[in-house]
Image 1: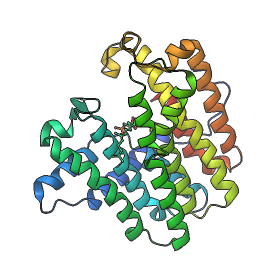
Image 2: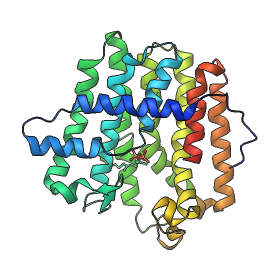
Image 3: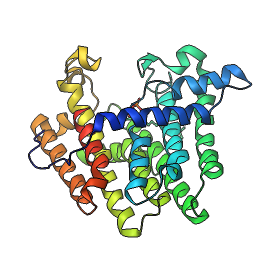
Image 4: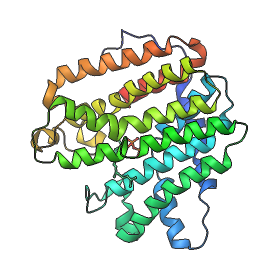
Length: 301
Ligand code: GRG
């Protein structure tokens, strides 16, 4: 992906990520204590505390701070978006869905705790996500908390990740065009990423212009996330990415490189990142530095 079209403000991104990963980990650890029934809470914690990239919670906090909020205003929401993301991967890995063995570098939940517990652990992470935001958010007006909860529930349901998953499942073995592929990924991956950013901005006190610009930024990087995933699956070495190079070309799953070609997909990714960066140009560059770098991280992760 060509980088010359955007300039990143100087920022110690590695230090920032190390600090934020620790903060998010500690907040998640505290949000789901090990309590009775022990085995069940162990299952919730097993997947939640495993080594995820934490892109969504970090975006949520960065967005809150960009509009002038304190990170504590967004921390319960940051945990909530990670809980929902974790639920989606626990359920996606189940034998009735993708039937996967490994997630986040360790055995999938159902492989360790059994299918019944994995289903219930995922379900509990969803309900806990909403409870956590509603009961633990402090320093934010109730109407903003309700607005943020509405955004998060919409992104998690039939107009978001569930809807994307349903269309993905219905498309198996069929010829999929670019509109359907966009629909699947905008909903399955994009909406929760977008909501993480929008919720951070709402809770941080953002005005309509700020929230809507960050929404557009989120929409672009949400789709970018999947376009890059498809490009990586095709181009990264197996050692680096843990998958067989080019294996996606052999499966019948629709991907951006298959529908647009590798060059076309890279052009599309460049376009998406430029559009995302343009939305950030509205804000003070120094304050928006984490979000510029997070968009860049999605491209080069
Ligand atoms: C039961 C409400 C409910 C929903 C379940 C299974 C399902 C419906 C939806 C699947 C959605 C899904 C798996 C989307 C993929 C999103 C995605 C790219 C997840 C992986 O995110 P990363 O790459 O992974 O950020 P880490 O592990 O770093 O968090």
